[in-house]
Image 1: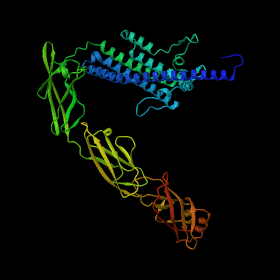
Image 2: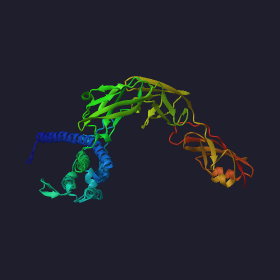
Image 3: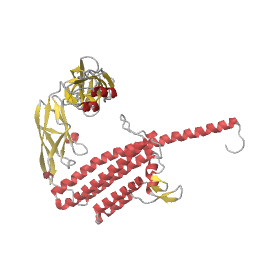
Length: 526
């Protein structure tokens, strides 16, 4: 393909070949980028699960510290410190991920919750943020320093206790900042360069999520170490009580109660018998892998109800009964929606009227509302209405209940225009008394007095009439030279009238305000 003179046809063939190779490389690149994206998604899901498990381990240590402080107080304190240090470092890594997305112009798809994997092929984002030549930028130095600070903090928490040495070795290896051999160039390079310089954005983002996973693994390993190396986990069941965990605190009449019954933190102890509401339940059918027993029974009539029953366990060869005590509230099925204007019982043209729309007992994601000019603005049940023509508008609300049935309601609102603004000069309205000089330099304005919305009103022009002088048109809010000349000819006691004040709402010039009321100024001095 190189050397010698080539015909036009051969040059074209060579060019097509190069394009073909480039297209193959692009396709392969997209596959690799997608693979990184899938890895990132798995790491994120793993982190969410690990976070819940670590919180449970930390709570377990806290409980044991209260029951047997001599054995568990110190490990529990260490666990709390490890949790705080890890949480701080985890959040710092999250800021690096957000910086990467922001600088690259990437965003998570609100519908799928996924990153644009195949589009995240830029390699210069972190290169510019963290590296400059063969050195680190201030941000790059900060990244390495924060990793080292996290390592130092964990090591200080664990101290020199020999039983923690192996855990510390694994931790140090997991967050090693040692130089790494780059086989392509045949020499060792700095850790940050090896892992992040020259990589596509999705690869770097995935590596940061993987580092967050390392933080979660560190927490889990240390928490389990604190639990396992401190004391045997054999604790008498007599110190615990059965707890009813309902899926929700209130139920509609006719629904089935859904929830779980667990025995504190030791619900994985299999009971020999379970009785609820006077009925014996087959343990093998309702017990899950965590030791929680699932409940399923009719909730009864509207009102508060008690759950009575008992767990039976075998301890020291004898049956041990632990009572189940709980309660739940049954509420009537909703037949009307709650629709309220946040400002008043009417809506106004020319403004975005905020509204809160909900259905009693129904979560916001199962409530839908519709009406002319109505749109959701985010937040729990938050909407705005931009009213159009007419004197009334109706908002319709539909809710989907847990059993799949639908209920509807509606409400009608009056539509009103924004009231007429009040004219003012020098901050005063109506009939005012001012010296001529104050009138000359005064600013003509308008405001909506006692209106429920704080709307910025901008005066665009007005007219001024001085006794004995012709009416003068003025553009803007300040007196022009003609107006000032006429004002100078006014005498004490004369009434200067400022009228035909034209004004508009800032940011909404399409809405036509009603006529602004005039201002009458009585001249108090020459």
